[in-house]
Amino acid sequence: MKIPPVKGTRDFYPPDMARRNWIIDGWKRVSLRNGFEEYDGPIFEYLKMFQIKSGDEIVEQLFSLQDRGGRELALRPEITPTLARMVNQQINSLPKPIKWFSVPRLFRAERPQRGRLREFFQWNIDIIGVDESTADAEVIFCALDYLREIGLTPDDIVVKISSREMLAALLQSIGIGESELEGLYLVLDKRNRLPADAFEEMLAERVADEDKRKKILELMSVESIGQIGDCLELTDAAKESVDELGRLFELLGVMGVADFCRFDIGIVRGLAYYTGIVYEIYDKASELRAIGGGGRYDDLLKQFGGPAIPATGFGIGDCVLAILLEEKGLLQKQLPVRKLDYFVACVDKVHREGAIKLTMKLRSAGWTAGFSYKAAKLGKQLKKADNQSAKKCIIIGRELVEKNELVIKDMATGEQELVDYDKFLTKCTESK
RNA sequence: GUGAAAGUAGCUCAGUUGGUUAGAGCACCAGAUUGUGGAUCUGGGGGUCGGGGGUUCGAGUCCCCUCUUUCACCCCA
Image 1: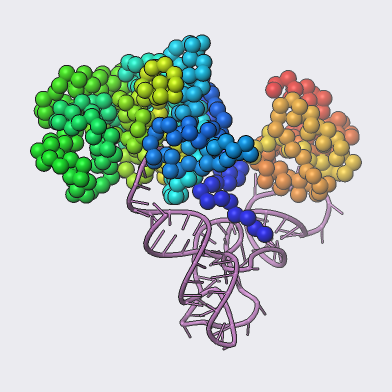
Image 2: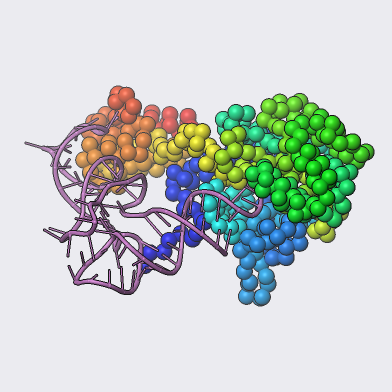
């Protein structure tokens, strides 16, 4: 009986695994050089941990299970709650600010589609304990530091940035009540994805007053931070968050990534816990889903029973990113090759043990080395060496018996040289 | 969860209006007179045609169900 892989999961064959590792190694390398430390938590948590916050979207997508003790558990659909839990547990002893990153394996019971699977990897970086927008800028820089390093340019991707706090202040100055905000966010979040008339229709369901609606539409069509002031008179609160957003863009300029970033008032984000600056990273052609996103979540730790500590962070998934890199031809360079430094061949059966012995000595010295499992003809063994992309092939034959010499063949040029066995071994052990 | 399209060797696909033992290229394995690989040539393995049921003398081909993938909702990594 053949059993297929589970819906929405992936098998990683060696070539796929090589690419996955290449992506994840890049995430880790860039995180570390930006000053973040790695952490991880369990792959399942109490179900209620994910129900507390973040809203229905994620809860509906949970894989949940019950253990034998009747505990209600869930496979983690995101790692931020775990982060909040871990930080809260040791909040008094952790040096501030806390700059942590993780590459968790996550699970969401969504209907799979291109760039959207049920099991995936996500790069998360977070800064906890800094309320200045410097932290937001640093987090955005870190994401771009990676994306830029692997070859993406401002022609390929864009970070669309806005602020929930600002949007709240602006909407309130239009006359929207605080209780209406959350529902309205969900509608505004769709503005970039819906045709104009469909969006207006949805808006009309939320906001009955036509004047208010007109003002909201006007506000949502501004293309720069400066235009906001032209559109309506700013309250003190609004002015403050507009200024904050301006400072963020200034900082991004100082950090040298301004050309990747753009203000977009339509970025609201679906998750309920965002409080301030929010952003999403898209491919410039906007043909794919969001590559990543994040923002400020100043109330989350408190909601998990900790102290009120500001926090900001983002996540980038591996699925959409891999598709984008594939399209840009940046993934093909990562074709994995099983490259051997040495392949040890023997001309005659009597040298087989010697070949194995030499192979193991090379390996112990740190070289990648292989030998033929069968006592096949030399031609066969060379073919094997070639299959395994060996750089050099060592041939053990009569030269060893007669003069204690090995034949070393360069597989690229075909050139061969004779080297004394003991000298070769000494050289190999020392140079590695 | 709702709607739509697709599914034939490991991969990319062909398969005539239903008609014998289902094909190609690539990949894989093995040979080509035994101390030299990449090329070429020859041969081989591998498919219950996604799975199940039905119509028919006969189904890869038509119908139904189901699974998976892709697309649109939904939502975001």
